[in-house]
Length: 223
Image (cartoon, rainbow, N blue to C red; front, side):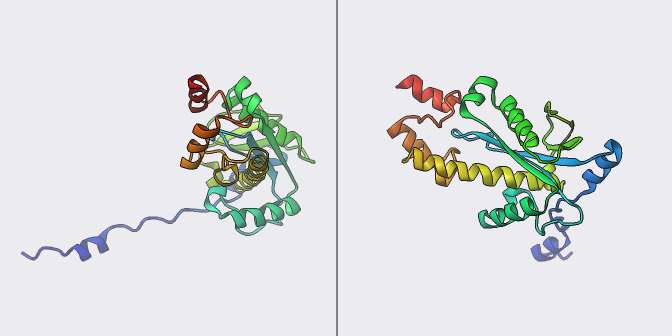
């Protein structure tokens, strides 16, 4: 009996489905149920050791959508910056909000994220009646909230918000790099990285570091 070759066995394996792109389907359904404008909301910077957490909120114009809106993590730095300009120019409304390192320590990161999201919505020139929010947590926001797990890959509005949150926070981390040189904030944006760990061992934490975070607290306690 002839044994199937490895090549033929591989050929019979099912092809992996390509990742889909976000659409306005969720927005359309929510608009029909709530009877008003719907924004997408997403955050950036919940995990880093330094810097604020940011949030973006966007009400897209379905008749004037920038091409290529996607989850910010799936885009290059240059593409995010280009899309940021287009989103701000063509959206019905948009807003960006931050919660500081001090607010993260006082409130915890979850509630500080909710605060940044509130500020992003409140900064919009037009207020939505409902928000699609990335994740599974129902934050208390100035409008009705519908959490969407994996929302930045499903909803165009959430994806647009993720781009605004990411680009705004990245610029702030570049500014913090100039204010507190030696930590490499402009490169790693406050996340855990070998160069960041070495700088912390050498320089100790800066005022931009989240001193309530376990790795930073351990350094302070060992000082």
